[in-house]
Structure formats: C-alpha cells, structure tokens
Length: 260
Image 1 (cartoon, one colour):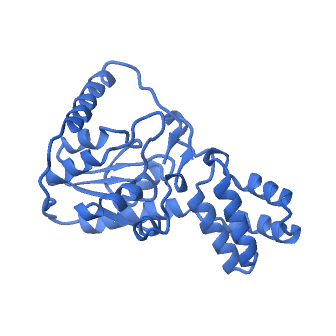
Image 2 (cartoon, rainbow, N blue to C red):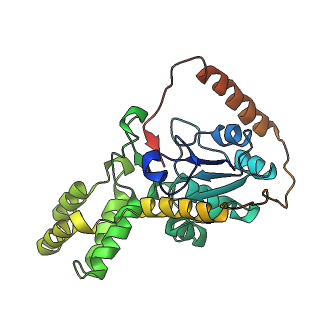
C-alpha cells in the first residue's frame, strides 16, 4: 500500500509521519499530482499547494488520477479548495475548512493563503492564515475575552489586509488605529499566546487520521462515474509535467514562497 501526502507550511513531514505511514512530498504544483499518480499509489492526500508564480495543481490532473483508480483527498489549504470544487466527481474532503468551502461559507482562496520560507527552512509560514485568525477570534469570543461586535470588526480588518501581511501584532495595531476599545485589545493580546487556534494544522492532522483508518486494510481502487476526456489543455499539462520532471532530475531545485 502506497500513500502520498503533499504538505509544507501547514504541517511538516516530520509532524505528519507519526500520524500516517506515507511518502511525504513538498507542496503540490501543477503536474505533481499527475506525476505522483503515475506511481500508482492507493491514495494521494493534498494539504498544501503552490499558487501565484507557480501554476496550481489542476482539476484535470486530479480527475485523471481518480480515473486511474487513485483515491484523492484534500484538507486544510489547497487540498480543501480542490476537494470542495471536485467533491461532485468523488474527491473527498476532510475538516472544518473543507466543510466551510463546501457549504459556501468561505469562497475566497486567500482565506487559506500564506507566504512561507524556502524548503531548506522547512516551509516555515511567514504570516497567519485568515481561517486561523477567524477561528482564534471566535474562540476569544466564546471565552468571553472579546464581545461579538469587536470580534466582527477584527475579522473585517484581517480580511481587508493583504494576505502576506496578516499577523496578530499588525491586527492589534490596526484595530487600535481604528478606535476599537483598548481594553478589548489588551484582553485579546493576553489571550493569544495560549488561545491561538491553528485550524489548518488541525484539519491536516484530521486528514492523516482519516487516511490511516480508511486505507489500513485492503482498500479497493477508486471507482469514478465520469469519462475522462483528454483535452488539448490536459495534454499541455501532462507534457509540461513530464518535461519539468526530466529537467528536475538534471538541474538544481528551485522554489517559491507563495502557497495555499
């Protein structure tokens, strides 16, 4: 049984291995799921994936992988987005973030977007994801640290901030500039060290737990109800992926710092 997991800033490979015996790969770029599926794993789990300067993992390669009998699951970040978009075709989603996208409560990609350090620095996230900030602010409200109206105004400030700049110190400073009650901000500041919620990490671990349970025995290959149509766009993705794989085998690795 072979399982592949694409992950990075949300959950490192070292953090994931105790939860699932799998092959952990870097965040997925376009073509990576296709290349992984060619190795005929039983299942692929997508947590993190590139965007902006690197083409994102495509819907078509996920559909192709599932048509080859490979189970594809997603959670937490890029995986949650793709799972919500492809659930009708059989991609499985796990966790609160996936469910929020599937219900339409979340609809923007930047809810899960983070900038991160390079691979040699462990893909360390350089900002806070908006979904994590929302979860933390709701936790503060439930704990009686801030009232609902202050929580809503803080969420609005975080949402209006460009995603690489999202962090709690900047949020508190901007909230003070906007005139939010100082006592509420001081209470939130005191709450954060122990009360911060990492929703993405929790969902990533949930994905690994689901895969460990679902694929513990002799799981059957994925069955789909659609016919995969190899369009010209798909042939471009496939050809480019194979060419990039050949180049990667002979050239130094390059990387980027943008990801969901």
